[in-house]
Image (cartoon, rainbow, N blue to C red; front, side):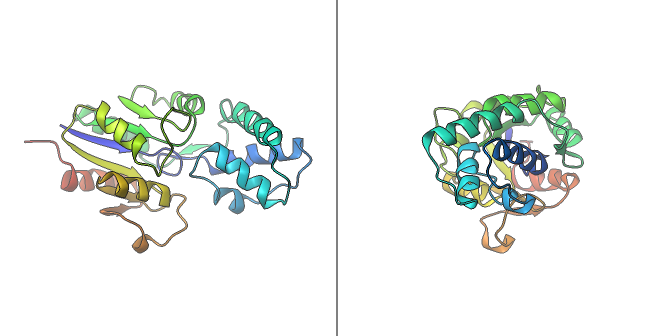
Length: 220
């Protein structure tokens, strides 16, 4: 069998507007200057802790452990319950369901914490899609360390694998793991496509099945 493992933010969901809105709320609560959407969008990919640190540094504030913990906690509370600014990328839901129906084993490897991950999957009716997942607050290191991706691989009963993501972090994770990588180009990357490790690129989820059939097809 074949296993297809997905990143979440910037790959399956466009959560950047939600992340920006949450950052504005928590920074205003701390009487800090707020940041533009493009600034915050550029901070996504390495988990909430890194995002909060980058936001604090961007406004020139002193990052104390107490400030970081307070902002992270407030950010998490918003992020677990608010989805009005988060959307699925087009054709994601039907593509995932078609792959599952055809016998592919699906996994998720994200740096988002587990609670908001499960909440957003439930919000979009995708809670039953993935057989295995690792999240950013697991005991494992976060991406781009290969450990979380390898953990998902080990949980899926498959012989061939493909990792699908959108960013520099995902590309490095796939490369460090030795897995083929399909790059979703509308996501949150900042590096030109040609400079990132990848085996295929796509900009619409209707194109993904063709990539899967060429790289990680179901066994005959």
